[in-house]
Length: 529
Image (cartoon, rainbow, N blue to C red; front, top):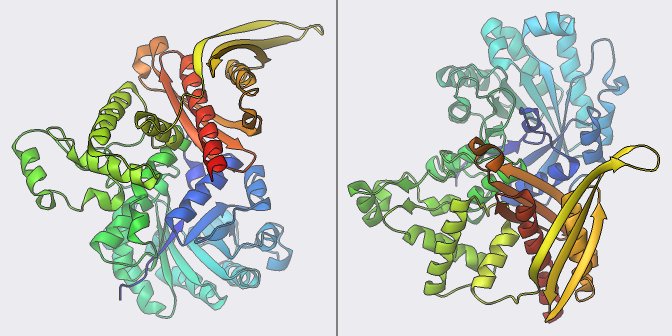
């Protein structure tokens, strides 16, 4: 039987420390649901009491089916008991199954940063873990700067782990917080800890400052760690954290470990990685291991021809095992197979000829700047329209948006947008005008006002997020814009759509149109059931 390695995701906390990343509560809930769907063992939600976003997240925590939700915090302060430390109370009251507490293990940090005595720090660790253990199913100790502390004073660093072990820690997680330790050193230190604490379960938490976070995590597993902490796509402060998207297939496909994730879910890895980038409004890394667009790309010529005949001789794993596809310039067969599987997943099987035509259309749209990984509803609408499976619910005759900046009756400076929409529905023309603070909101209101008399279900549809990305920033004000819109209805269903144009309002209207059409398609399915 394969040996078990547990995966602990810290995206919602460590990832939030990335420059340019700022999760909303809704973002955190969506990401937690995706991590749970993939099947990670633990999802760390953040730090209760640290900021309003994390407080709101833990006030209405996600209901996870596979993953255990963890709250992160730190050991009690010097001079206080764990029961009376206000910093620990939000964790004890959060009602989560896992509490992870970080503590100092480097003597210099204890004396200089905490201003505490070394023995007091040991008591802080043991008592905090013991207190947490009484409020959750599992308590974990993150040994901060452990490898630096061990290099400076091995006996004291081990004493910190022993204190947490005595306190009842279910896991002792060794942290390379500076991210500067190299793999051979990681392996040697973990082996020494394994020998000193044979009964303890060890984990590893690495940062990528020396470009070794993934290699360090694998070295730690080789030496005896059975939990790995990391983030989606390696997000994190400075150079990032260990990339679980890279580690998961390496552990399963190359080392043969059981990560608690079935092969069918592993095939969702590429889609989840790219969807996450879409949520962050970031461009996916084409060169990313396993999931990048170039990860299984082969240029034309002799090598590409050989790959087409014997792919296993030229690729380290089959691309479909991680949900990616082979890209051979001289052949589109790999893309065709991947698209066929994707259509079957959404319940939309298609004949071979139709798949080929749709693949051509997808490639054309992607060359224009479309990205469908984060806009599944637009992909489904495109596919079903090409197969004649959805009607034209409405057709646009034209729209106009005017934005006016003026002073109101109170002398306050305001900006108001007015949208005019002309559409044809069931052979009849409808003309509507709407005002709103912003042009996209006005356009949305005018469009739905024109459609609601025919499709009253649209009253239960709401735009919940709107993201804009410039595809070619070098073009300046003539750049092409990609707009992604997230929608939700009163039944709790959510979907994402995308539009691309050199005009941001045109791109917005394309995404809005797809969002409305998808809602109407869902209503048609429900009515037909």
